[in-house]
Structure formats: C-alpha cells, structure tokens
Image 1 (cartoon, rainbow, N blue to C red):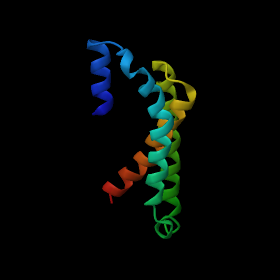
Image 2 (cartoon, one colour):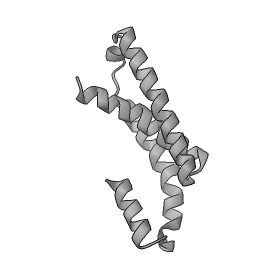
Image 3 (cartoon, rainbow, N blue to C red):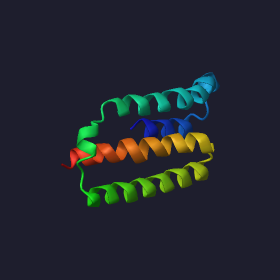
Image 4 (cartoon, rainbow, N blue to C red):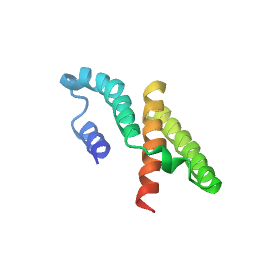
Length: 103
C-alpha cells in the first residue's frame, strides 16, 4: 500500500524537494535493517527439516522474484544497489511470509 501511495503522490503532486534527502537515506538504512531483523525470527531447526521438493520450490520462486524485482527496478530507474535490496526483501522475506501463510 505504501508503494502505491508513493506512486500516486508522485503522479499528482510530483517530486517534493523537502523529502529528497530522506528518500535517498531510507533505502540504504531501513531495507538492510528490516532484512536483518526479519532473519532474527527464522528458526533453523524448522528450515533443516524441509523436504527437497520444498527447497526446490523456494529456490525457483526466489530466483524468479529476484529477476522480476531487478528487471522492474531498472525499468523505473532505481539504482542497482537499491533494486538488489528490494529484490532481497521481496524474494526472501516475501517468500517466507507466503510459505507461512499457506501452511
């Protein structure tokens, strides 16, 4: 929802100069922080007990998610480092949330 809201604001209001420094800082600080904090709640004992077919599904889904996020990042003009951070968030965190919800 936040991304959609940001797109709508950018379309109708345009770039707001006062937010420029924050917009440059936020992805570099918050995305890695959130990925680290998310990793804290992962349980290694559950991960090692997964079936090989589950590992394959996770690997394929993660690769596809990375490819789409990086491609879309380049299409909209986001830098490669930020695209990789977003791809990591979507591929790793997003995939694990999907797995947990669908159990």
